[in-house]
Amino acid sequence: MIYQEYPVRAEGSSADAKMTTYLISHSEAMQIKERPLIIICPGGGYRYVSEREGEMIAFQWNALGYHAAVLYYSVNPVLYPTALLELATAMKIVKEHSREWHVDPERILVEGSSAGGHLAASYGMFWKKPFLAEKVGIASEELRPVGMILHYPVITSGEYAHRDSFHMLLGEKYEELKDEMSLEKQVSADTPPAFLWHTNADGSVPAENSLLLTLAMRRHNIPVELHLYAKGGHGLALADERTMCADGSGTEKECTSWIALADMWMREVIFQ
Image 1 (cartoon, rainbow, N blue to C red):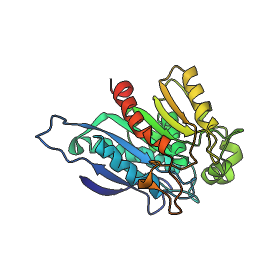
Image 2 (cartoon, helix red, strand yellow):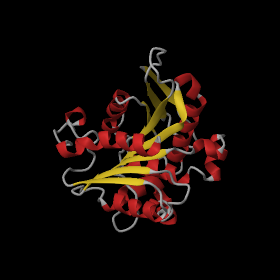
Image 3 (cartoon, rainbow, N blue to C red):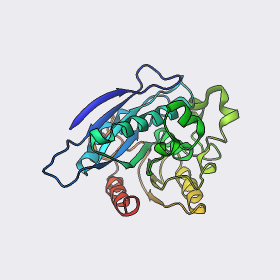
């Protein structure tokens, strides 16, 4: 295991913005020479970065044969687009080190939970925006993720919005930018495939967020897979005792299948 922290700096970044890598050690004894890498964006409503939705998920990807990295992005009072620029910078760092880290540069995904899902999905929608390449200093095509994995993501600023996340992200520009950041409206031919999961019982971020994005992607004929579980609250992470909340909540046995399903989706849809 190669564990290392890299400062991630963009315009307006907080001093503690960083990316932590969880890289499987390369071995000449194994046939695999390069592995996919998943950049994980934990949730936290753009108020904080959830520890429950970062490292433990990275470890599970390692166990399934993937490299992983967790992005500790800037949150309020730092506003949009700083976190998006930080995610683009994290992608740049991974691409620059891909040979050294034995990463397949064509198989890098973004993953996010809740507001981190909004960040990952924003990146999936906006990776080709000229300002990202210009500010990060890399060609736009190098910023494209091959796919998105979104857990109970914040997507819409409309009827089913988790409005606090948008207020934390946009601050005084909420009214100006809320429609632009309503991501079901931003799907295009350049949007990468997505795997989503949500619970029908989510009382914080309604499942309609994932449904709206799924419908938008279907309209654009972009591969998308959605799992809507009957039970379970918001912020489940791995959904078992490994990421249980301090008060004993945050588990739902039915939802623990999501990571195996996402693994199957990557192997059968993304990496074919």
